[in-house]
Length: 340
Ligand SMILES: *Cc1c(COP(=O)(O)O)cnc(C)c1O
Ligand code: SF4
Image (cartoon, rainbow, N blue to C red; front, side):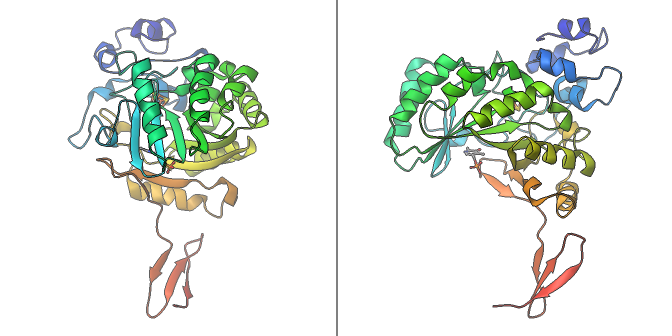
């Protein structure tokens, strides 16, 4: 589903929804797997909130920006973002199977977005990686790299395989959840064909996203030799309560996906209805500690606006006291620890 008419036809929005101006600005995308997860009878459905457009997106605030995490200021050549010394993002495509309403790259992704790298641009990007021997890891993101066919992905992997200093290839994707049928033996073979250690960060925000088909896709990936980590965005109305976050993180671990990042939402245009305060986020994350296994703990991070990179924004548990440190336990009680 890609148009307002499609959404109306599926009864996901009412007729005369006023969504045309939203659709003109931001792409719409809902796959059959996602449609199955949406509860049309619940006006506050966490799945609908993530994928069905809303007129709230027309409201922008002064602090929001088109390039919230400053990708453009660290892009030496088309398709590459090089912010940290040892790793680069390689953005080969700018389309996704779904369009998340809170997307931090919403100004760049979608059919009207930056498209796919041309083969000349890809040559330049690959040369950049080959020329920079400090690049230890290549992170394929976008857009969603798993919209590429296994044949195209294998072609990319064949080129990375030849670059000796690249040891890790990491994919960031929502495909195992939103289009799980794409994850088959051929896809896994393509993802791992570089011969490098292959990581894949699964983006999911609500425990309901772990459908039987998604679970099968995770299993295929793990058994095919891909190491899975998670990434989620903390979103008002979707997962901003301890029970939902705990179930989400446990769901990842049960599926052999190590929780990695819980992102504070970025300042993308028209997304203020999803944002909660950092203090509220810190309280939620602190409440996970002790309540659920250490395996289930994500790192709460903020991408600092302007391109300064990620910062761990979990509440500090240690402070300097009178001649000692004060350390707070998971129930909020403080204990002394000696200096030096
Ligand atoms: C998030 C990000 C990375 C990956 O950071 P990790 O902390 O290694 O997950 C790399 N490059 C850019 C530009 C990023 O935004
Ligand atoms: S899958 Fe990622 S890049 Fe694509 S719309 Fe969602 S958040 Fe944005």
